[in-house]
Length: 263
Image (cartoon, rainbow, N blue to C red):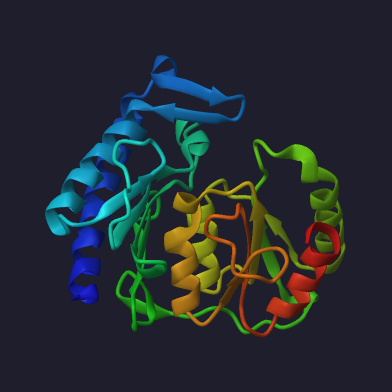
């Protein structure tokens, strides 16, 4: 499998989708927004973007299945499967703020072998394939080397369902507010993870996540020298709905905080 060649094709597919998303924002109206739940939305842009991405990826790798946010394609045991979020950060998008992104990952059996995150507002494309470093717009990126709480800027997201863990979540926020450089909540988990991979953020955590939110970004972090686990330090992060990410130097300190309140 030519992972590099496929990755470069996926980059172009993501860019085309991003161009469509960018242009459609100029004419999006309130009537175009459908409500999935009180804080979860979808538009014709999400759906059309996903259909276009799926169509292009089917031509690129006809034997692959799909895991997609909007359900326009399916997976039925294929060796290869694409994991796609056609517009991560829809709430940002409909309110006219950035970031929002396209996230595409390829899995071979149970292993992620390729990841692309295209942040549309800044025209930044993050990508990696099996055996490669991680890149941003053609330049290699690495996670940060910070090792102490007071050196670190942390990213997170606010869940819009599964509020049973909210007390522990607040306790983690309380500790991080007091002991780190600060917290950021950008509204696109794919971008959060890409920023950890590029060293802009030192760590990230969130629960109530889906595989399409995180597959590509998590792979970028791994290829950039970082670590990924679930809240207990295990490997059930892709489909388990919870994820901790960070650089190698800081990760264990950060995970200890998560374990104490959320593990």
